[in-house]
Image 1: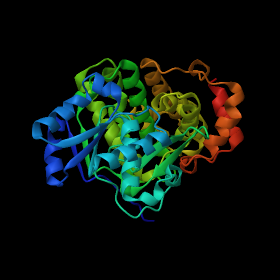
Image 2: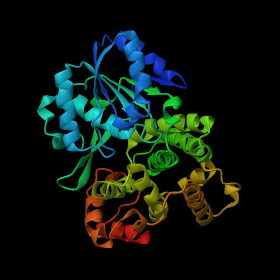
Image 3: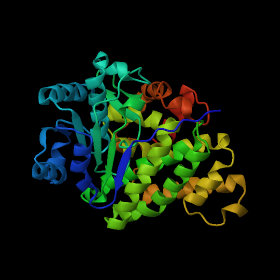
Length: 383
């Protein structure tokens, strides 16, 4: 069997990493930048740390800041028009997964205009050209969009999210500067951090997992498991560790896929506008219980990575429970809600949610085959 690994070309890590942006623009002979970001990141002075560098260096740029937490088809279309109007030859994306996902779709359409119908990008689109060059500057520690080939767009008309996977969309440069994550509120830090843990856990047990990605995912789980509480408390070392942990998780799952935690989280975000990381975090342990029979001995390594002691002396049933309990304890400690009802989910919507999840692009990667009826049962188990 042949396994494929795709990673971005260049990444910078650590406090002050943003100082490499101008040099990378010059090295790649990029002249006109479309800066994609959110209004709040400008308002609170996060994005301006980057634009100040562009100003100082005399780099020509335009700003597109009309972005949503769950990016929509219209967001992408508006961004394409902004990119054309600016005559930009590259994108500097400053933000979390939503900003970088939107930027990927914009950049792909700019060089593959036959995919201007954003829905045509769903799944593995047969694009021919690399996207417009993207320098991805992450301000959260969750999605790892700066290193993945994936992005997710919301179809408001059909009340669903769709996943796109395209090797042509990967940013040429990733900037992972923990200083930009220091302003994250506690709740956002918790939900994005748990999203990173979901990536690592699902990537570790997915059907496509193999030795190299197992290595990446276990290390990511270890880092996140010991660092997320401190990161949520605002500790700089915790935030720095989370920036690395989420990136390592992205290196893995981007190449092997995910499972039904994401499949079930996507319609929750599309229908109720629940932040993606929060939706994933709420689904995680319920899905882990369902998947346990199909994961062999992997929960033993999962328990160890989560810091559980004396795992080797436990029975399979014991270490499976210990792994799930350790993950739930972390979710509880960073105040992730346990009940879908608390997030506004209505029981009468569960059949629609389950149908959407069953048809989601992440479902085939789940280690245990699942029916729509079983997905409904999982949703109901945490109402």
